[in-house]
Image 1 (cartoon, helix red, strand yellow):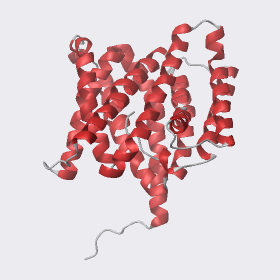
Image 2 (cartoon, one colour):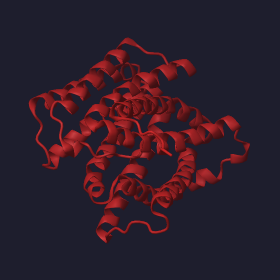
Image 3 (cartoon, helix red, strand yellow):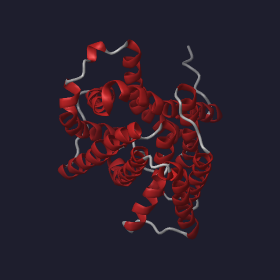
Image 4 (cartoon, one colour):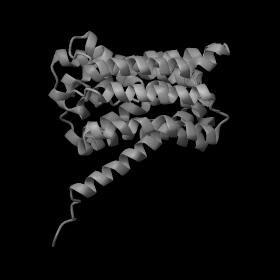
Length: 314
């Protein structure tokens, strides 16, 4: 009796492309889902719930793969994993959550797409990689694009929304640090172990800091729709989404998968337009196009393996 037929290379790549596009749709829609959740339970309440659920997912994944014999790590690597948890979860996810609340879904997705720019700058400042002229030009173009994108808010004096966008820019830099710092750990222990351990270690301070707000929320009064949105945002988007994205990268390669990320801002914008009152001005659309073009130029003008470390956070 023959076993199940395994897909050939072409079919496997096609499956990976479909999964990758599905993940982009999930992530793009998640900005609007989170905006609705924040209105009901506040950003801090969302963080409290997220980091009660995420460790359970991480433990379940480790148990599924390793049983009760979790991989051992050195004391030095444990310290580095704790740093990843702090920068990736306490700082990055914490700032992203509040930044999305202050900003809009489309703006948030566009600003976070600037992450590769900060990764390049961190690699340059740390001496790991030199930037070529095209990459420098890409960084400059992306910077101009962000200014154009933010111009309508700044000129209109919408300081809370502008502050949210700037908050997200700083958060994107922490995500880039996570990406660079995770690479040597991933090479030693694998992406699953690094993601799970960093999640477990990073969850503790987030839960402690958000507990006063989280315990004050009447969780039993949440509607089934809000509970579904919460589980979607945490389990489907934040956890399963990054696992699926890691598989897509493994099948298609980072170089062929990364450009799919540039579809996320348009998806986020379309979903926000459909479910909310978000509207798009000419400076916003023009700034978004310039920014994504600059990021793409900087990211792909001189690819290196140092930028290929997966970052399983958002």
